[in-house]
Length: 346
Image (tube, rainbow, N blue to C red; front, top):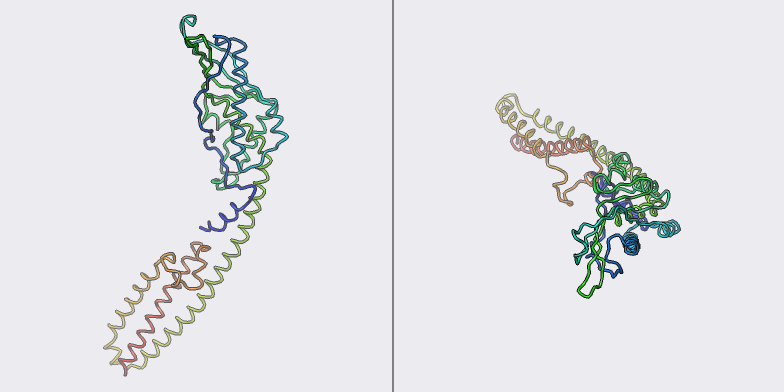
């Protein structure tokens, strides 16, 4: 109930929209590209030149992923911090092993290693704070979501470990191939450490933007609450005005029916008593049934003025509307009975 106004308020900011982010949902990973082959000089999984080339390649992929994330985001990045992170983040490979049996006779070497993104000091803490404070489009309240960045990685990326500004991953795979002409190339498989290092950076550099968006959303929420209170009060006032009118009309209709009934002689009243009793029962049953029709089932042209504020009604106000509609039916049928009895008398 009462969703129209808050949707308009909460989603109307031009620069910062609190309705566009997520909390505790799967990371938006960029489209996976096919592994790319690069020329290398050594037919070896552990050759220092190959390892250095791999580490440089991982940073290049990280920069491309980060750039894509920031271009597609609705939040501003802290450019000074972004430049600092870009310059200082590093990727390292360790515990490299050659999985291929008899590598001296093979044309392809299957290589495996551990991979670590070494983050600038403080990036992890800032990313954790940003994750906790990221504007949330689906949360029902500020305390509704207590998940942390560590919870997120435990659930979505259990193979990754984030600790002390180091994002560690297992089973980074790459392949070194030798052609018939002894040309050597390197093929690299994608790894979550790269994309999640970009994710951490995105969180960190957009943290200030998240906080600004949250402040704006608080202001929108305050405006909504104030307007909702005013609109609800107006809706109640309209109900009460209609209630007062209908009570007066009902009292007058009953008095008119009684006056008409009193015109009959005792013999006539006795003759009409059963018919009158049956009519009373039918009137009450019919009006109870008709009053149960929801205001939302009525066409706009059939709505009474006070019913046009029904989006602000609570349960008590819906019940009050039902009572008014019962009385409205009661009055109409009572007037019709009065006309009938007058015709009988004449």
